[in-house]
Amino acid sequence: MRKIFALLLVLVFLTVYFLLIPIPVNASSSTITVPDDYPTIQEAISAANEGDTVFVKKGNYDGPISQTIVIDKTISLIGEEAEDTKINLHPLWVEAWFFTLPSYYETPMQIIANDIIISGLTIMSDGSSISITGNRTQITECIIKTGLRVDSGFNNEITGNTLSGVSCKGSHCLIRTNNFEAGGIDVGGFHNLVQGNFVTNAGNRATGINLEASNTIIFNNTVKRNYCGINIYGEGSNNLVYSNSIIHNVYGFVAWGGNNNTFFGNDLVNNTCGAEVGYLKGSPTNCTLHHNNFIGSVQQVSTRTSQTYIPGLWSEPFNLTGVFDDGREGNYWSDYVGTDSDSNGIGDTPYLIDSDRKDNYPLMAPFDIYSVSISDAFSSITPANRSEIFPATIILTSMIVVVIGLELLVYFKKRYGDKSR
Image 1: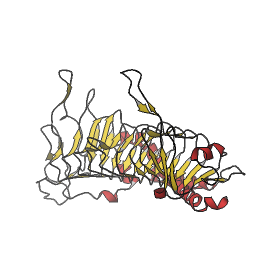
Image 2: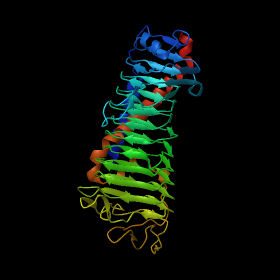
Image 3: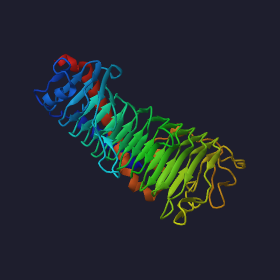
Image 4: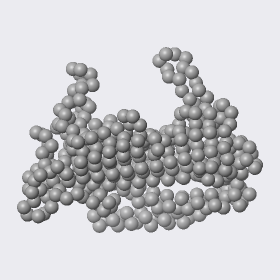
């Protein structure tokens, strides 16, 4: 473990070192102001050179039908203030030619260059989602009232925004401290981080955080009043989900696929069903749940024995999957009635889930999920799985330091950008 801490410490210092190295920029970079220099944002972007800043003054920017934005060069697009700097996009509606093809809106905003910074804007659209395909895009302190997709790329960061849903299929991406007013987070790819988000009321039969990624960390999020709180499905494997508050959902945590996932140190409070661990087809889901607090749910763990999708073809047992302790300690169960005769904090008898599953070491008191550090969470993973998730801990340490530097950069651009005109 000392070697792990030493490695993480070295990575922090290396990250800080590289942040302090001056990054080459266009010596003639300038600030273009909308509407002073150009009446529309797209005209300003088209006129900008690599490294320029497009500064958008307060106002409502509502163009004609077919108004979209394409960012195909490395620039910063900075609004004066998100609540009062509003862009309303009108992508074209494309009618289907055949009954088998759906009609759709074209993409309202395409971010296809690398190293784009977007901040301080409200972005709305008649339909469809903003698309990111470049690398190292930074979207901070925006209000986005349409979908947002990271279709590809790496090291993209979505931080401190008010959003209507995010889909991330990139890698090494960070989705951090956002407030989701509608919609949730759908994570694919690998080595991504989802931290400190507030996801509530994602929609009818919607999930707060959907995870079909690998080697991804989901931590310190609050997920409330959704149909499903956090869901691992498909090929989502080698993921770590810890220190999340999952409250008042129909299903708190669901694992319907994947392998080698760890669900550690989470609050599952007042859900209709606290957790369901099963599989749709193939091998049983390998998911370990321990040091979680199962409190006040109508049913702490789903005990149904099958889930039929196609009668006679798809019917797999749900009562043979999931491990509910780590071999030494298990979870806290608010309806556990056992005793602790030796006062070691672990119940004398197992907590019975059903005829096939039990928590052999139930905790007598709730576990403090806010005391969990990344090293604690990493230690909670079985040794066989650590090599799979460990790269994400490296990314976490490095990216948090990078984000701090980038947030300072955005702050100074917003505060002083208009003074360079």
